[in-house]
Amino acid sequence: MKRLLLIIILLIVYCLPQAQTLNQINRQLDSLNNLQKNLQIKIKDLQDQLHASKEKIKALEAKKSSLSASASNFLDEDDFIVAKVKPGGAILRDAPTSTGKTLVSIPGNQTISVFKSQQNLYFKISYKGQIGYLSYSTIEQNQEIDDFLAGKEPVKEPVTTTVVRTVNKNDPRFQKLVKLYGSDNAIKIINSELWQGMSYGMVLESIGKPNSKNSTNTSDGIKEQWIYSDYKLDFLNGELKNWTKK
Image 1: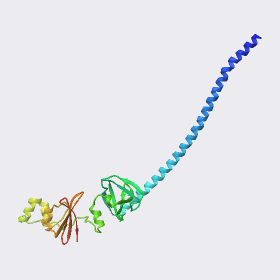
Image 2: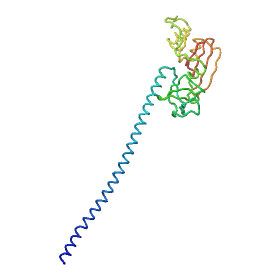
Image 3: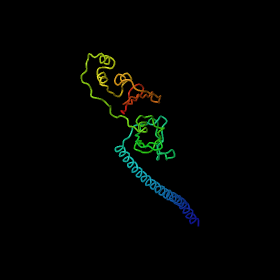
Image 4: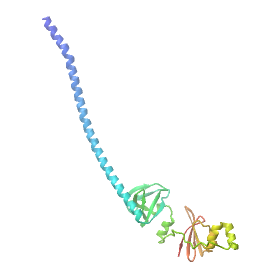
């Protein structure tokens, strides 16, 4: 009897740790199976998000290419003016109105291409391949833009006459001009030419006194216009910038 009891006790002692170990393994297996299921769900969600992100990138790249191509064609086919945004920056909109949707905020002093197309004092412009509308009030003062609004085209090529290759070097006036402005400029002045960068004195010597003058103070400096019977000359800070022939 004692021997049988001893055997039973030994069996209990042997089986008890084994039963506890199996329970622990079962709990670990259940935990790992649950973790695996959760990870599989998260992986599927991430895969779905990755796919959606790829589709958005693809759509945006296609839109960017389309806009870049449109801007390139526009710049190739249409006349435009290179200008700058005022220091305070500007908002590019999808329509020529202050209620238009904002496309992008342009930082101050950025270079833009201004098309000769405006509505409600909003110009169609291109900025880094994106085309939209910009308020005239946010564009730095630009003579070409002002000329366009006034219905006139600025002179893009200097209007000159044939350069006199020889002059009378003994002419007192020529000698005076050489001392003041140099030989090359003296020849141009004797020939009544105009060119960018001329001073007031050069212009007076070349084509004489204007019929009238007017000047304004701007953020760029002093702008002055001289009006002749056949010319209008525009100066900035004492230098001739451009002119139109009537």
